[in-house]
Structures are given as C-alpha cells and as structure tokens.
Length: 180
Length: 427
Image (cartoon, rainbow over all chains, first blue to last red; front, side, top):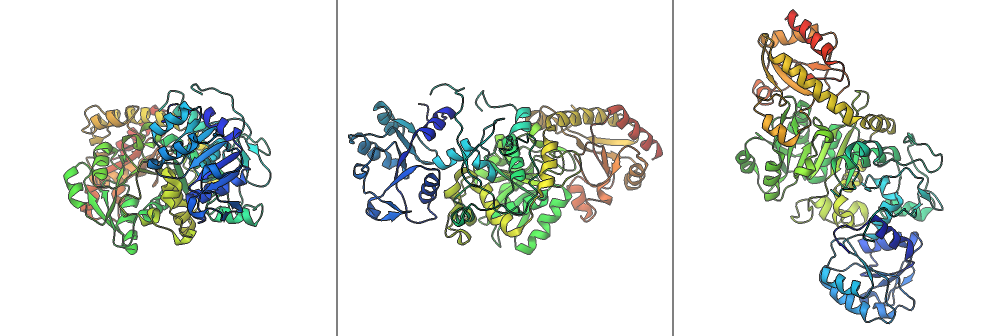
C-alpha cells in the first residue's frame, strides 16, 4: 500500500467494515484528541476498547481501560494508535504476538513508520497511517463539510442520514480507484 | 495534484454542495435561521466543546456558508475556509488569531486603500503594528523582521496598480524566519492564481469582488493552506496553547492542518461577531459558479481596452501587466498566464482636474468604489478611496493625482472603448 495517498474506497471500506476498535493511548481528559476521537467513534456506533497501562482498570466514557491489547476479551477489528511514530514498532510487535490479530492497524495524524507498517502488512493486516478516523468518517459522511473543511469529495447523491439531528453516515461507494 | 482530481470549473460548481437530504433541493438552500436544534443535552455539549461536527448558531457556522467555505477552499487548494461578513472582517480575524498586543507584521505598501487604513490606524488600537515595505525589495522585508514579527502580508495582484508580486520569493523569506505568508488574492481570484501553490500559508478574499462577481453582496473569506506549523515557535498561543475558552483544548494539535481555520472560527468569528448572512452566502455561491467564464472575459476585455488606451494621445501611461512591454509582464506570465485581471490604472496628461472631468463624463462606466463587478467601473483614487492618505502615501500606493483606476466589466469590448473615447474627448 502506498502510504502517501490512500484510495478513498480503501478508507471507506475499512470504516464500514470494522466494529470493534482498540484505542492505544486513550485518555481520560476530555480535551485530548484521543478522548475526542473516542467519543465520536462511540457516537457512530463503534465498540471502542481504550488501552492505556496508566489507566488500566479505570473507566473512560463508561468503557473499561485495558493495560494491553492482549488483555481485551473480544476480537478487535482495528487498532487505532495515539502514540508517537517511534512507538509503532513496539505496537506491531504486540499485535503480531496476539493469537487473534486485528484486521486493520490505523495510526493517527503525524504517526507513521513505514518499516513497522511493512511488517504488519506482511502479516495480512491492512494499514492506514497519518490519518484520523474521525476526520475520515467526517469526510466520507459529509459531516466535516459543516465546519468549512475541504472534504475533497464531490457527489450528486443524497447524504446518508442517521438517527437524530445532524448525523450522517457513510454511503457504500462505487470503487473507481485502483490499488485497493 | 492526482490526475483524477476534478478541474477548476467542476469544483467551481460542485465543491461543497450536495442535494439537500430531506427535500432533494439541488441548489444549495438558504438556511435563513439563527439556530439549530440539539438532539439532546449530550449532543449540545459535544457541539459546544468542538467534539462533534455540526451547527450551533449562525454567528459561528451555517450550512449555506459551509458550502461556500468548502467551495472556496477547494478552488484555492486549501484545507478549510471561514466565510465572514467582508474582506475587512476576514483580515481582522486572521490578525486576531496570530497577533498579541505589541506584536507586529510586515505588509506590502501596495495595497487596497481600505487595508492601508485598517492596518495603519484601526489595528493600532489593538497594539498591533504594521511595518510597510516595498514588496519588490526582499532586503527591506528582511530588515524589518524582528522577534515580535508574526506574519508577512501581500496582495498577489496589487490594488490599484494591477501589478503581480513575486509570491514565491516572499514566501521563502517568510518561511526562512518561521513566519506565515498571508496573501490577499481578491484581485486575481483563484481562477488566475492560487497563492498556496506558490508558498502562501493563508489566503484571504473580499468575495464582494470577483468571487461574487455581480456587485450585489458583501463577503470575505479566510482559506487555511494547511501548510504552516503554528506550534513550532510558540509565537501563536491561540493555536499552540491550551485555550481557556474550550476547557484547555489545544487547537492546532486537535485539528491539525485545518486548525487555523477552526481557530479563526471558534476564537475569532465566535467572539468578534462579523458573521456572513446566509442570503449573501447564497448570492456569492451563485456567483462563483461562473467565476472561470467571467474572469476570462474580464481579462480578455481588459487587455483590449488597455491596448487601445495606450495609443490615445491624452493618456500619458497605462499600467497593465498584460501588455507585453509592461515592466510587470514577466511576473504576470509566471504567476497568471491566463490573463492579467480586470483592474488597471492609467495616467491622464491633464492630471487631477482631468481625472475628475473624465470620470464625470463616462456613461457606461459607473463611478463607484468597487471592483470585480460584471459592469465596468471607474474611480479616481486620489479624490476618493486613497483620499485619506498623504500625497507621499498616495504615490507609494500607485494612486497619485493623475491616476485613474478601471475595473473592466464583461460587456462588449467595443462599447467599453466607445465610452472611454467619448469621455476622453471631454477632457
């Protein structure tokens, strides 16, 4: 996978297929980016499992925090990493040591390590780096347009409405790009 | 830009807009409402805390404005934008976001007269200090930079003289000193020139001019290039420090490459208040759909008119960079090969009095203080827009007593020239 530019269909398919997300670097402080993203993903119906050894056993937004990926009692579809790029090789080691590996490794804005990504991809894990799932969900649903952000999406189709006011979902898109 | 990226004309029509999900309305509706209903208290808290995308109150955001914002961001190649009530409001909010009392910024001295007033006088009350420089002199720019300098500001195509500025050269100076380059792209419009491609970090517009294009609605916009690191130097605490307004949130860290646009919205527009009305946003959106067609016609007409004026015996000089022998022609070819814009100045041999008589004799041209209308417009800057400036400032700004400024419209060129011909006969 070219980690400079991802096909939109690759991102959209990941966001539509994953249900359980382990968030490494989750925070209990409500103005931290990881906390904001966790809140958004929960609101969009994802089942988020916060991971942070310093908060293990505590609750964040009503969810129990785990010390490590190995401690989570369910299958994780996607691991979302809120750690520095230098921590990524260790995260990949931890993932590869699991009996039940996730399908997707996602790292937040500015977090990228191509060598670590290559090892994960060789094990059949899809990788997205230097992206934010909240921003990507907002781009693909159109919600991010409400705040003047350039979604770089053009569509003459109806947005997908979710329950309640001001809530949009992701429309399955025709695959017009390659490399997926 | 990847090859499957839509072209400029496609973006001018489609970027930001989608059919309305409840009614199927294809044109963007005018959401003429002050406020938006919350789903529940939790949703309200998320919106107020910047944790969910969405609308709260039209002073901060509105769905009609949002379409306009995304459209201009796309046309300029930026990450996000914020639409406001006027170009002046855009500049006030940009500087409010980057300046603290006692700070200074460097500005080109060839600017719209209203900007010279805003920077030189109004901003002084906030203890923000402008340092004027000749944008063609890089050494002078560097000499003016000190540890309280926060930005460099230029117009890409400078009002009223219609001269292109070497954006890349000035961007390099700004970045060498860790400063953002802010470019007013009003006169060129993104159809002719996209400053972010040449190193600008923030672009502002008076949309009142070419973006709206029909002389019917005021509006301004701030485009975030997504290129500047607001956290590196510690000089921009609105972006790099925990904000008490939002429980200690750090805006650049939280919103990344569109953090500047968000800071302008939630710290600037929210608290200073110059919101754009949804109706004006709708008018400007309608206007921008034809920007590529209008702008090319403006440029083609202006070149024809400038060429004709240059041969007239009552005209002492014509300053239009589209003319091949113009000293600015090489920069125009580099930055704006599709055309040199609609606005230029020329000199009357008869000086100040001839300028007044000429303007009063025109029948098709309208004598008013605007540019970028479908109609041809004329003004004599030294008796109007630049009147408050000293004689030295007038000359420095390209607005001396013999100078007439034209904004060439998209009428038939023959009728524009015919009107100039009869008015020159009266001088």
